[in-house]
Length: 55
Image 1 (cartoon, rainbow, N blue to C red):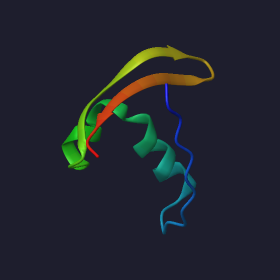
Image 2: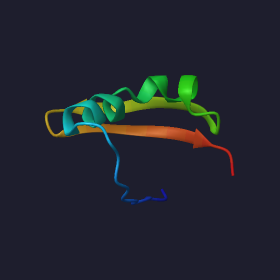
Image 3: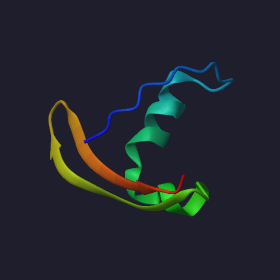
């Protein structure tokens, strides 16, 4: 599985960004290049998710 790591500066609070990242299932609603996303496993340390993205 490919892993992507990227850093950017945003003008939102850390809490707001965490809330956004945690809503994996909603990515296709606001990311036009995301064809699908789902959580494979949820655990205390976070989530494992899979997304389908167009190039």
